[in-house]
Image (cartoon, rainbow, N blue to C red; front, side, top):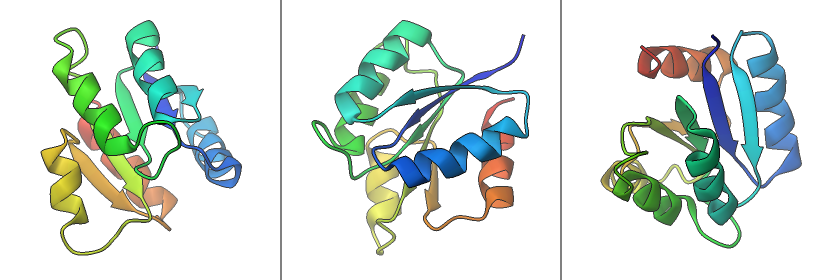
Length: 121
């Protein structure tokens, strides 16, 4: 059975880049366009990994990650923050919110896939 990845990303261009990337793998992709929808999709689909944008409408990625990690049924799911927030301290903030990895945009597809594979063991 293929692993499921939930992508929480509000920008269509960024979703398309990740769609194209995941299409080259055998992972199944689920999408959510805001933080609240991401939390709902995580509970509904129980993905194997979550790619979480930080700057999101409705609920930001930090809060969405905190809510997912606060749910005993979901807290084991690794979350990779994929964000254009690449200032010093942002990675620590993402990790403090419960993210298991951090990738700054623009990212290299190879770098993102390597991080996905590292966490999907």
